[in-house]
Image 1 (cartoon, helix red, strand yellow):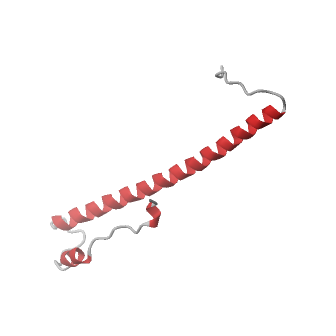
Image 2 (spheres, one colour):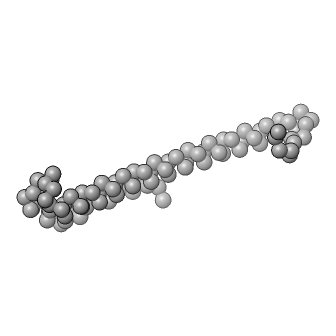
Image 3 (spheres, one colour):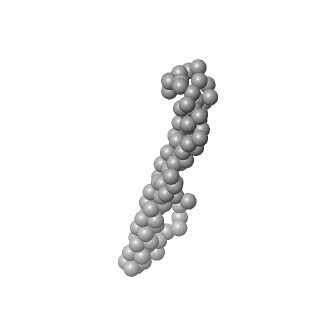
Length: 92
């Protein structure tokens, strides 16, 4: 599952129409239902964005890890061609 392949979930039109039809201003604190819904939407969007960022970071790290493995394999092959056996001793 790739987060960037999916559309952001939207508030159903009937709920938006119901809230819009009340005549309250968007910033009206007295409309608790609307401000609660806006907070939930904002939290959901932040979580969705953070999950997307983390997924892409994992992909970058996996790519970097594969590149590092290729370099290590190449170095081991080079040392063997030069007549050396790679050491299995832990570094000092």
